[in-house]
Length: 125
Image (cartoon, rainbow, N blue to C red; front, side, top):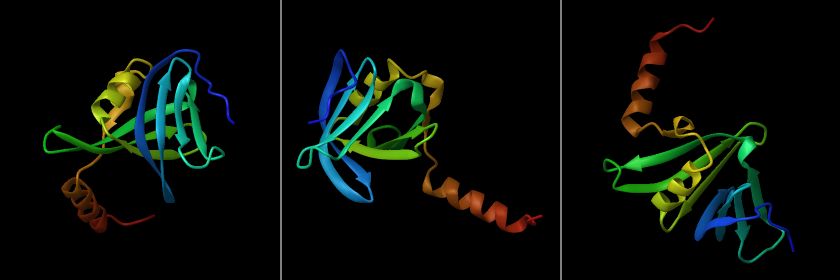
């Protein structure tokens, strides 16, 4: 059994982690960090201390009505993508510990396509 890094827990909610294969479990947000525990295999867990979080990226659709997934970008370990039952609650709980200027929206499909067309015209050096 793995020990939690949190002393005080703010939110526990059912979630999905997209780590190659889909892992189902629970997200725990507390005073020391963000944690994901797999419901079937206790050896599969993700613990991210708040000092390690570089930014939180939310995929926002329909003008903020629906947030299908969000990602946590870390300073050393890369990006971890999650989805949960109530993503707005999760993002509000994260906002207590991460500066709101580091919480950003991801690019939409059309913004990605626009950047791609702009970069086609530029020469690589």
